[in-house]
Image (cartoon, rainbow, N blue to C red):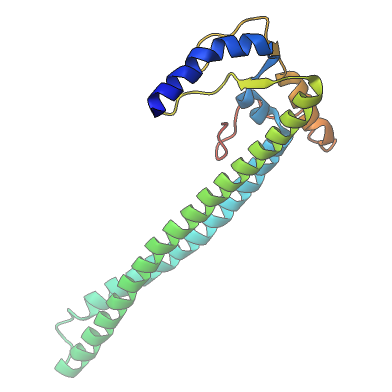
Length: 207
């Protein structure tokens, strides 16, 4: 029954669309995303955040390397043939304790690296969604008053095949990309207006 209903809906769709006389526009959402000044600002902040994370991690690596050198020095000290048995035992105990500290520090280092990467990835996804939501709001505010019934993203691709979802579009369709980009950047600061990147920056990929 469900399959029959779906079939009937698709069978009636062409006639329904024709009768409705839909007004359709197209937009290159990828281009609008790239040229939006907020995208560039977000990428700058993400680059700064990434640099902060890298510094924190490198400082931890440096501390780990110093501790590793201390362990190596203690290890060599335990092999000194001139040591008395009691002194050798003390050296061995210090070596074992320092070696355990190094092992613990290594686990902390690996865990913090994963945390920093996750924090950065989460921030990228959050900013990406925020920017797309802002663009959609502008498209909605523009398209309704302009009388468009449908706006199609020509940059969309199938997530399974990677092939463009729009296989053909008529040149008669109105492309509103430039109008949307103009509206998106209308509130851009004077220093960034008109300086949006021509391609999606690393970190925040276009939709």
